Length: 196
Image 1 (spheres, rainbow, N blue to C red):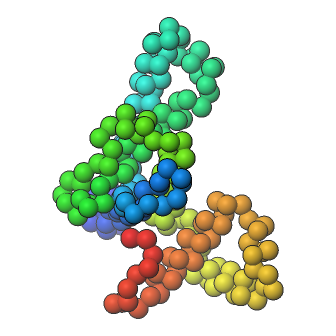
Image 2: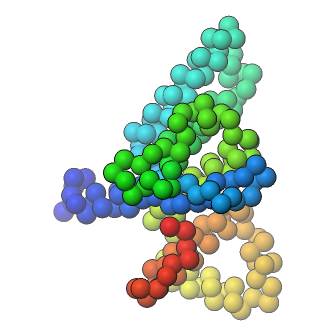
Image 3: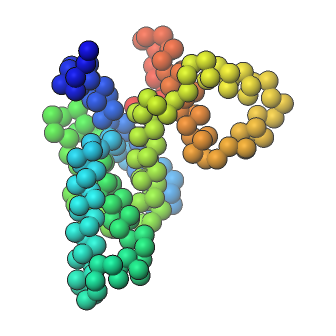
C-alpha cells in the first residue's frame, strides 16, 4: 500500500523535478557555450503561472482601455504566451547553482523573459517541453518495443525514409525512448553522454 507521503512516492516526484542542463540558445537559434538548467514545475507552480498570465492579461487590457475579452479578441494567443513566459521565468536556473539548496533562477523576472527574441523564447519553451518528456515515464516505449523499433530501423534499407513518416513529436518520443533504454542498460561507472 502506498500514500502520497511515502518516501517511495516522494523519490518519484523528486526524480521528475530533477535538473537537466542545456545550452542557452544564441540569437541565431544555435546552442551557445552558456549552460542553463531546466526542471519540471509542480502543479502548484503551473497554477501560479496561469494566475500570473491572467494578471498580465488584465494589465494589458487596462492600459489600453479594453475589456479583458476584447484583448483576447485582438490576440487570441496572448494569454497562452503569457503562461509560457511565466513558465520560462520559473523553470530555468543558473546551471552553476543547481547543487545548492536553493538554486538561483536564470531569469530575475518575467521582464527579462520579455527581452528574449522570439526564436530564443520558442527554443526555451521547446526545451522545457522536451524535459517534461524526458522525465515522464509514460512517454517511453517498453524495452521490448524499443528493441523492435531498433531491429526494424536496422533492417530497413533506408531508415531515414521510415523515420520520415513520423511527426516531429513522435520522433522526439522515439528518440527519448531509445536513449532511456541505452541509459538504463549502460554498465555502472561508464561515462554518460546523455544530457544531465
